[in-house]
Image (tube, rainbow, N blue to C red; front, side, top):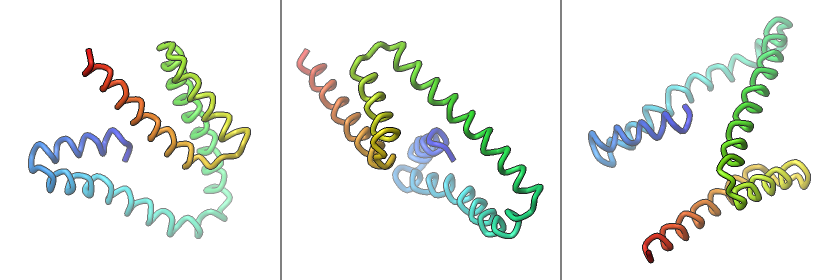
Length: 130
């Protein structure tokens, strides 16, 4: 499930049964796809050597690449349209770190999460002072 599905499940679960409901909703949202993917993984080795299956999977890779490119374009154009120079600089730095300097994507994502939290806290403190 994507982040929207999990976040939606958290909100609904919390509204219905508090923390226990949120936890149950998270588990209920994550477990079915996890089980399905585990079963697919188990059979993948058996079918990946099949020419037709291999060809279909290769075709799917092209589709996934197109979807990722579309998401990157949509997110990047939203940042560029907002004309926040700091966001543009963060986006460029993340790109350079991953593509040029071969920094692991996980580290870039973690750094961006921390940076986003810090920026939000700073913005909220400034709003409180007004």
